[in-house]
Image: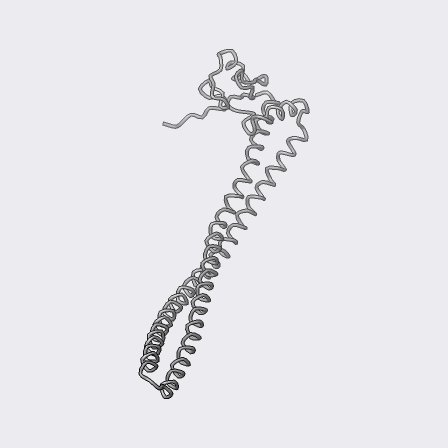
Length: 240
């Protein structure tokens, strides 16, 4: 294979490998982000539950205040009963007393209901807090694993980058400029193999003359359809 073509194939493979490192890092980070999102969701539920508990307690306080007012009203009615002068006043006080007692009964029932809701919300809060603790523990463990994986990826990236840099030190500038020009639009498929007499960049079949030149590998050959640099991969034979 032509030395320049050989170097282009190596460079292309280095560039393709380097391009894959960032997605690998992002993939590792995504493993952690899923658990972080779950933890944040639980925190939101916890805050909402706290707000609901506060609302229930506020309503209970209002009912207690109202209950105290009603009991004061009953005391006032009881005092007025001793001061009535006729049956009309007595009946009015009795009606007022009956309404007050009904309101007291309702207020007591509402307080019981609110206490039950508060107790259920407190239990729900404990469950959420326990679930959050589990998620945060998982996040710590995954963080360690993700950091180790990213460190390994970065080490591998540094090795590839160093090897690429060493290759570029002895690279022909004109050939490099030619390669970079194609790579601007072809990205990591600037240099592609020919398989089954087809360019593996655009997947178009190349003519016999071009294919013969690719097989010889004496010159740098471009795909007549897309302009990518072509090379013939060494064929491997499968054992019977």
